[in-house]
Amino acid sequence: MFRFAFAAVLLGCFAFSALAAPLVYKGYIKDVRGTDGTLTLTLGEGRNAKDQTFLIPSARIVGLSGNEGKVGDLREGDWVEVLMTADGKTVQEIRHLPPPKIK
Image (tube, rainbow, N blue to C red; front, side):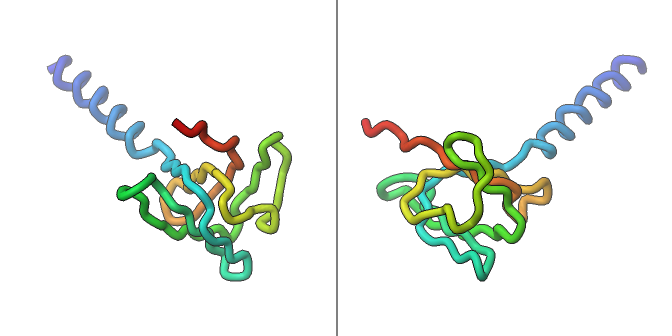
């Protein structure tokens, strides 16, 4: 009985931690529409590349040096990381990243 209860608690902890993991996307900015509160990123490369639009009405913008920014600082072609809210519906934070090294 004790083993079963322990296994159930352990499984519950793993399930909760998997659900609580934040969604993070990295990609190049294709379009920013501050008035609409949207950001479109190109995710992936080559044939696997796809565009995805995110809601950014109250997203925090972080520059390369860690300073606070604003939506107007986001430019087409910037390499960014997008951290989603817990519900996965809106962007919590957008971080500028140094450009990836070309292989």
